[in-house]
Image 1: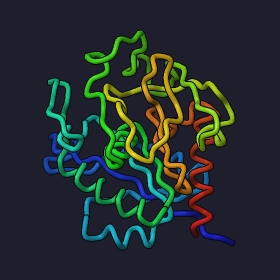
Image 2: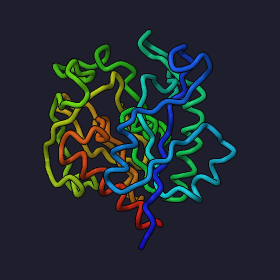
Image 3: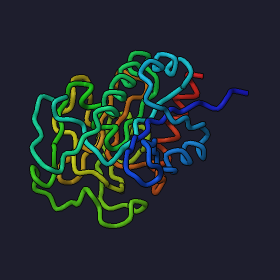
Image 4: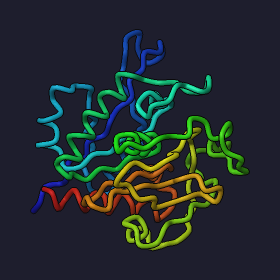
Length: 240
């Protein structure tokens, strides 16, 4: 019997005086429970750059999670344009190093929300720093209804890996972001767009599984969310 795949999950780091008076790691529970439900073992990853080489030898696949922060625009040769742009230097530095090691070994990699944006920047792409300030849209990408409900449609591009996984051309998603992919990085393909043309998904077709989605499939709201995570974990099993 093959072992269950180990799925590495990036963490947030907080210094707010709530859970502890000292800095603390954080991850939303359903990032972990969705992986457990679908046959993987979630492994939260601490910020230890020196341990990355060991991590990619032991862990079978990785998820770069989202968070209430932004990637410093310096990474795509821009300055901060808006007060809404908030950054976490330590987290971004760590996740870039981690992703570079993952991509080098062609391990399954799923970027969720801010994780997709990080992937795009690593590939040399740029970001819309604030959707409402730069784009005319009638879609609220930071939805007002609860995050465990869908809020808008996303159109899946045919002949992409994501379309092969989802097997649908239009899906419903939840939405919790004020930034988005602007110019896709070199080697990335757009696999999903909202009706206002905001890029909702990207992928590297040359790798076994390197996909970014702007929504949060870990909530498992729709069957299509489950399909994404199931295929991701399936690819991780192949590596074990």
